[in-house]
Amino acid sequence: MLVTLRMTPVYEGIARVEMRPVAPSGEYGVLERLLDPAWARTQVELIASGVVLDRIAEQLGLVDTEELAESLTVTMVPDSQIVDISVERPSPVQAAEWANAVAQSFLEYRRDQAIENAHEASQQVARRVQLVEEELATFGAGTDDAPSRSSLQAQLASLHAQLIQIPDVQAISQGGGNVITPAEAGDDPVRPNPTTNLLVAGLLGVMMGLTVAFVSEHLDDKLNSPDEIETKVSAPALGYVPLIKHWAGNGLRELADDKSLSAPA
Image (cartoon, rainbow, N blue to C red):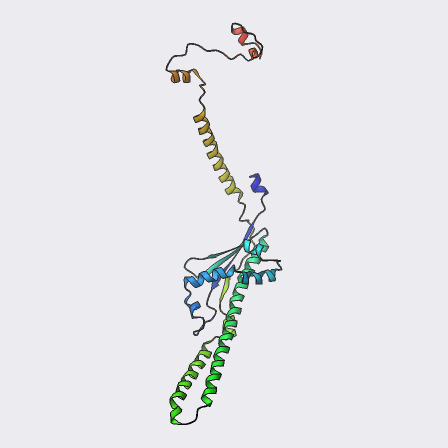
């Protein structure tokens, strides 16, 4: 209990995040829309990755991410796309602040990455559209060019369809999930727990005491009473030799009678 009372209290802040696809429609981001377990596990690993923690450290004014990484625990809620982001700190306010910062930074990072990917995909398709249009412009009105022109026109229509399917920035900025339960500063620390520690210490003390008593009794080969002697040697005790403390070390020996036995030690 002394050690428990001297320990620094540790508080926990938990932010619950629901993960959703960043891209709400179209072929872009189809793997995210499947929300398979592998995708969910990847997102859990991403929360504690360096790219996300670096953003948070910059926001919180931390020198590095080591302290944040040691305080952070990410847990996936079974059979769902919900994660609990837990941060343990000596201050309840700081624990809640850090947990909420991790949750928000994770969602912002996913959206920023999705916007960047959508922009790159849009540029690639636009370049292909330009190439096909330039190639179409080289064809004349002859019948010999009709099959090639039709093929290019089909490619152009397909590329325009792909452009439409790529989500815009506004759609992406509203996707990716949201914080369904923000972390709040709690009054009770998660560690140490004096009641639990006292019960555990008491249980361990009783177990250790019983163990020591059993071992001591098992290893003790002294005979402490006439009954033990009679049991051990299978013979009756005929008499006793008393221990007279004031005789010890003085070289005196005399007949033990009531007087000598009652002398002061």
